[in-house]
Picture (cartoon, rainbow, N blue to C red):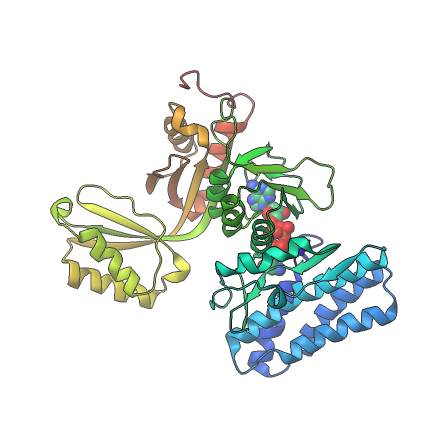
Length: 430
Ligand SMILES: Nc1ncnc2c1ncn2[C@@H]1O[C@H](COP(=O)(O)OP(=O)(O)O)[C@@H](O)[C@H]1O
Ligand SMILES: N[C@@H](CC(=O)OP(=O)(O)O)C(=O)O
């Protein structure tokens, strides 16, 4: 059992991880943050009171939390923030193990360092190291319930590093793969993965079965319900994933598997994510200039920027980036380098873009999906800045102005999922 830190109980609530981040930031800036620390403690105490924990046990768990906050290395800010963030999951795992023991279960808290969950040294963005799988394998042989904190691991040198936000899903997938589980059940707060973000459209269609490839694309582009990096370990090990509701475990949830029947549902879901920008570059006879694309991307590589997509024409190419990696200072430097080093005719940057994605394994065998989508977007008066069909043909991406994104998703959802439109085109070829 892999646990996350306590999340939101209602929309206006604050996740424990966010309380911990607030604590870490104030402590770093002002040297103390007693009220922020107390907010975290209060949340755990409230949970333990709700579970009728004996007072002594509660005190021990709070004392261990305070100890780990005091031990976090305040002189190394990135390491400090990671250690503080991880204490939410760590405390929760200790608490859950203690609770299961109160219920008479054989349950033990296991520390990721002791178990060998080795990760790269990328603060707040760790990746699992291959050797971790062998080390973690023996967890499967332990008796009783292993309660393991999600969201963080250790470098082989013993430094605590967290995954990116939402990363307990990643720990779950790594452990499922390591112990060769029959199934990875991931408990969240919704009955299933829906065909569209339920925060955008009320009561959307539930997805019962989705493929790894579809889920990877949907998670990438806004389905935050399952972390995009959590699919790979389970996928490689061939372990099916089932997303279920903690508060309604009887609901069947959504299964993520290798293949699904796409006959009646070529499109699995519609997703969107904001915060993108595009560098547009044009140069006459670009198509004949060997190495142009490589040199363009090399500039980005040298600037330490990863790119998302590169739709191109004959004499032009756009590079789509996440805006958070491309502040104005970086933009001026990159633009100057593109002009000076590649001698282009035109280079410009467009900001505030969103990517809207239609995802479905059945699309490559169905005629007319793109036409239906663009017609629906045109009818909703959404201007398309870019269209890109992924080479895998599992997804189609539309670049739109961020302000148009929700309208675009609504239009596409109505086109592909509402009763009068949901059937595939008669022209679908199988
Ligand atoms: N397509 C979708 N289907 C279901 N939930 C979605 C979808 N897109 C976004 N979400 C959001 O994801 C939330 C669950 O993810 P998250 O809060 O990270 O859960 P957890 O903490 O359990 O990992 C849901 O409450 C919902 O608001
Ligand atoms: N608690 C961490 C990791 C995590 O997985 O959270 P959640 O299960 O609430 O998505 C975070 O908030 O990022």
